[in-house]
Length: 314
Image (cartoon, rainbow, N blue to C red; front, side, top):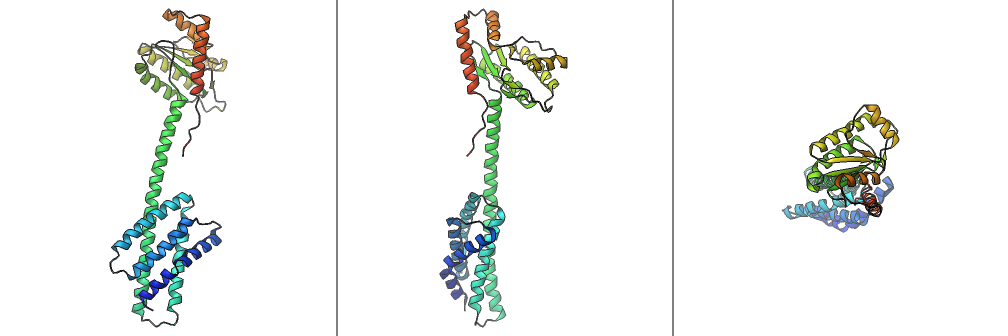
């Protein structure tokens, strides 16, 4: 047997090699390989055969790199543990060695000839394995970077939805509905967004509505921090010449603010409607009850549209 005969045998048995690799892998792991993986093993067998006889491996190496790229993408698409890829590769390698062993039966070779055959086969298979692992790592890193970018976008979306800034139909007024669980992080986002948006919105007044706010019961949220956060927001806006009024404080929230000893230098109202009436009186706006109803319904609708929802990713 010479290298050419060995290469021809591997080419002739390439589908058998791929099928045995699939079968043995399934028996050992209980997982089935998709059609693309089987095709990859057929192509890999062709690379091994061509590599044994090629004088110049430049073209073969380029095709092997392309194979490794496609194969690694398919492996990641399967979403299976990394070790499965290496197990498949080892099973494939065993099939190649089995063919070589069978071909050596009844043949007479010098030690040098055998070493030459083994070394060439080993180099080709190892190179294929290296290219596959390199491509797998590169594509995994790309996938992780894309995932991180998506996570950052989702986090920003959650931040935007957790503290929406809604332009009101009331002139020079914005509405900030606080809906859901109160957290220090949300108040930090609220402070930053208000200070950044006030100039853009040309706002003179802000209505901060706590009607839909929920206070945690597990003690992780420090109510003293909440009171100080509200105090800092009020002072910062006051320095900008903007009046903020708070509506919808629950009795528990009021008690905690009083207990903290913090003085909030802002008007507070039990409902959104009473807050609007206050603003109308302050600004000398003529608002009848029907107009108030329309404004209140419109603001409630805007608030419902901006309630936080879990972002969907693909």
